[in-house]
Length: 504
Image (cartoon, rainbow, N blue to C red; front, side, top):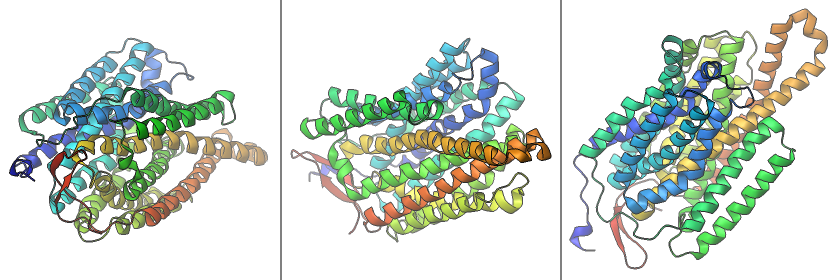
């Protein structure tokens, strides 16, 4: 390989990581910060109960549907450019949401946030992939990134609680502007993308259309399942459309010269195992955030701010698991020896929560469950984030990164709809079978008992989903520990920058 292709590590890469982490935190916390503000925004703008879900769904549809497109654009036009443009667009969309005068303006702003987030998120992860090529440094960088990705949702709950309770719901949008301004300034001044790591191919328009429509149909199908039921004709139609569109997408990708998602990214058993297990783990986690938030606020009577602080032990666990366990062991043991035990430890935490009752002690039940969940998820997410992009050709780094985010977004949408439906169904069944207790307990206590039974039933499903994620990791992920750094050669005689691979 010519000397020019040997790219030395960028001396400013750690400064760059700080700004990439700020951008990642902004995107991740935006997934939950608006949830806390939703009741206030709904009342202020006169949004109906039937339409309020669109404040969440508009963001998820645009984000999940456009991620692969955003990842490929980052590969084609440059990750720094995509990252900066994504930040500026996200800030503008946030300003629009904060200034929303009506429902339409708010929903449009949320869709725009999702679209620019889909450009920003894969660019951020792929920048790390091409900037950190030495095994130990890469482990540390992904440890920090993984901790932020895991904890950002809970940070969003705390920040959302403070802003909604002490300022106004609009600040849950305006708060993104300083985040974006700092990250964009830092990106412009500090980030330098390694030479020769872009993809010179064209843009696969049929692939873009099929992938976007297929993912939107899938995410929207689960949303409609939550509101209309699983057997409704619209729900079934959307799922059928998703299967047809995504099957057509795979067929197109196997034929075109410059595919949106090169199948070589997916067919690697280790990456495939990571995408699948991460998606399942996120299904469990999103459901838990939802139930625990409702449990603490509605059943236990916590304020929004107190609810946010109640999630702090989980954040601490995630950061510890990611930086102190995952990052330290990643270069010494194979990823599945971190991921599988991590998912199983999180499942034990979930198992504790299945014992929740209307008067459960926070210290005796919720606290130990959160610590175990945080430690387990942090330990598992860290090597998963790294393995998802590890060993890919640099020109595919953006789209491989987009697949991580896609599995998380789709998993989040599925988790919220699936587990919420299970919880609602279990609560209804409990009410029917315990109708005689309604007078004895009183209306509020009876409703709380039913809700807690529903949460516990859904959390049992989450336990099973996490165990399944661990089984998938054990079955599919068979690579050795992450070590060394070698140059990989692209197809068509194209040379790429040095990139780490796994030792088998």
